[in-house]
Each structure stands twice: as structure tokens, then as C-alpha cells.
Length: 65
Image (cartoon, rainbow, N blue to C red):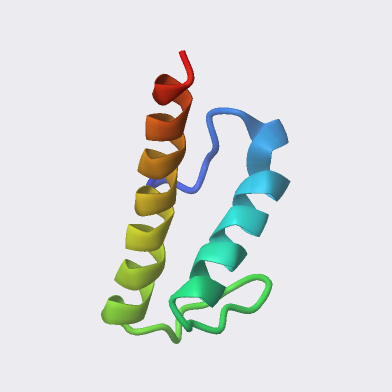
């Protein structure tokens, strides 16, 4: 996804919302659109939080099977 293209274009809005929620949880203020002023640490914190939440969601899914 590094190219900025989603595999499922219809999911773009949900992914943006998810990113904003993750950023809020780690205390990073994102704005709509370009966020090139973020430090690598801030961007990494947001990405790491997103991965953490995805793993937790998957683990919860497999527990209920």
C-alpha cells in the first residue's frame, strides 16, 4: 500500500477514519489531506497503533470461532 493506492477503493473512507482514530490514541494530531510535517516517530506511532488494533481485531475474531 506504499503507493497510496488501496486494493479496495471503496474502503478509503473507513481507512481514513481508522487512521484518525489510531492517531488520536497515540496523541498525534492529523489533519485531513497532507501530513508531511509529521516526524518519523509520529508517523511510526500511528502506523504501529493501526497494526496493533488490526492484530487485536483478528485475535478476537479467531477466539469466537
